[in-house]
Length: 410
Image 1 (cartoon, helix red, strand yellow):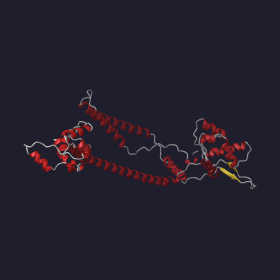
Image 2 (tube, one colour):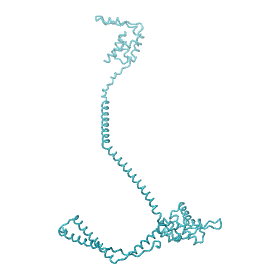
Image 3 (cartoon, helix red, strand yellow):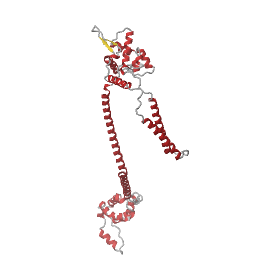
């Protein structure tokens, strides 16, 4: 099939390149007439005066790319039709380079079927599974989880609001209690803010203070103690008790490292020195010299008396006179003993009855014996109560000795 196609295509290409050859060849009508007549023998081509030019054109024709790959028979038949002799054709074909065998066309296998439909089907399945799973998860979330989370959030919010309300009410109650406490404690005696406690009141110098702190005492010592001991050390060294000398003496010891004294603590010491009543300031005659300070123990008699103490003393005196006005009676102890005995019997009776009802056991006495004992105890109690209540007059309480008034208590 390939050779036939190439032969059929060859005559169309050959005349274009070998148009001069057609001028010297016989006309096609004559050749067809010779071929159509079976009885007539083929006549040799008539020689031409110049065969060299025809051979050159035949060589050019055979060397053309369109004819080079044609088979031998096609070339021979075409050259014969152009009027070349057999010897010339063999000579021309011999002069042509040897042809390599025609390489058959490469045969490729049929392409595999397209995988796009399967890919699309798989993608659709994956998307459908994802959509179904998402729908199921959303249904579970909105059906079961979201109501629980909503209730939990609302409960947490209500609990937080309730706690805030309770805290606000507690704050308001504490504020009201503080105001009421201020009003109630206004008449009570207040503690002295400048009073020293043990062991600081026993310190006589800064060395004693350092020893008390190093021995395990509290580092929160009163500022009055520091200033008082500093003034005592300055007086023992015969130095002027000015503010500069006081603070220089304080910072010359190891108290700053023990008590973490800083600028704020130094300012509080200065305010204590100026505001505390025990420290008195003495102005010097010279304006260039700094004022000196001294410590004086305050007299308890000079302290203002709270208004509540006189009222309490008056109440104590009136109560003492009322108690002393009652006559004493020697039967008071007897009445007290009878009252205690009656209470004891009542307690035992009710304890026995409750024990019988609550803790039954195998050793419990018979109901008849228990009922008789209870009746006897009740009769005794009634007799004692009647003896006590039938008295025409009650014995007054025993007068107690008077206690000292509050204002005389040390």
